[in-house]
Image (cartoon, rainbow, N blue to C red; front, side):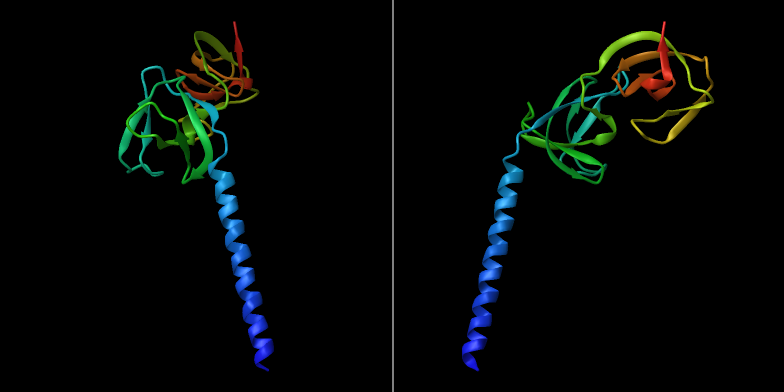
Amino acid sequence: MFKNDNRNVLYMFLLLVILLAMCLLMEFIRSSAVAEDAYIICYPNDVVIVREKPKKTAFAISELPPGAVVHLDGKQRNGYLHCVDMNNETSDGWVSKRYVVDEQPIEMNLEAIVISKGRLAARKYIGGERIRWVKPQTDVMVYFYTEEWCVTDKGYIMTKYLEFD
């Protein structure tokens, strides 16, 4: 009777050791991942705040202008992306994913025309809440351009709904 109990305890102990080793290995792989470059997109005179923790009320540790490069390690929490290898006193921080794109935004300052079939939502930030409706054939000033989003004088508009002169 005691022999089986000891064997079960040994199996449970080995299982816990294996699970712990797997967790440590996964954390090592995740933490050693290569940082991926991304870019800040916002209005020309605005900045995006880098925060100490992934929440809006956290201490601001840096400001990033439009087009700034950020190095992301893949961690996400509460709508924020974790930045590493920053050029300030701290080596990491959190930036809202609302203002981060995969490709370098191109500064344009050119007019475009809205080419949607119906009214189009101009947004507060990438994929964000609508701030106004824009009618087809409306002229907009495009400040920054990426293949997916443009920052315009009316708000953030998806590039596919704009035609440039």
